[in-house]
Amino acid sequence: MPPAAETSRQLPAETAEQPALIHALVLLAIFGCVALAVSIVIADFVVPDHDWIADTISDLGAGRYEFIVDIGLYAFSAALIGLAVLAAHVHLGAWDWSVGIIALIVFGLLVFLIGARNEYGDNDNEGWVIHTYLVYALGAAMTVACFSLARGSARVSPVYRTVFIATGIVWSASAPLFFILPTDIDGIYERFLGAVSFVLVLTLAHLFYQRAKQLKANRCSRM
Image (cartoon, rainbow, N blue to C red; front, side, top):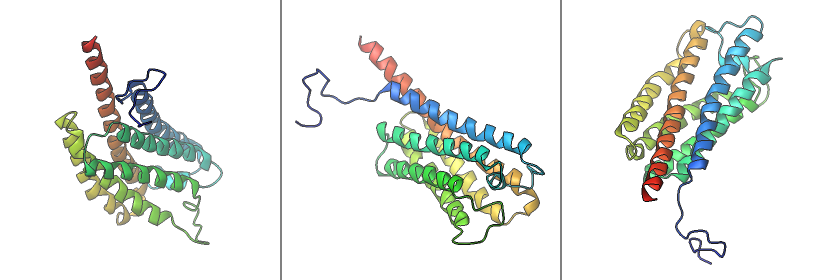
């Protein structure tokens, strides 16, 4: 049976975007951002002798209370993967949009690996330490995602294209500075970069939410 053929259970032959799925994954994206932000704030208070201005988020992800930030990182990873699924479900572009989908998947997997590899913040240099390489790759994935998704997002509204390009420029200009800044401001600067990554996630979530509203309105007008 052809994949788009009408079935014996009267499923329509025409495939369509599903607003319920869109809403569910939009909520997951929002939850991922909230969970990561809340986990960092909680860990800032719980972890002894932690200086949120000088100490990085990675420092919170090591030691006795590592599970607090790890939970937030896993939730944020799920949010990114969920957005990749959503971007594939609602494909708004050509090859560049597809590249953006892959970048979101890679971004999400890298966040998960950073949370799972407890080799940072505790001066552990034994074995193969890959944390720095994961951070480099994460920075590249974020950059690619912003610029690759920009053109297709304009099909919903030109504002999204502007936001994605602006976010990509800000990220590209500011992320490399993290490695050359004085260590006494590492923590606050890393939190700033985290906020920039939230702009990508929440803008995508808002885009798909608006798309779901458009679909619902179009279906109602046909009735």
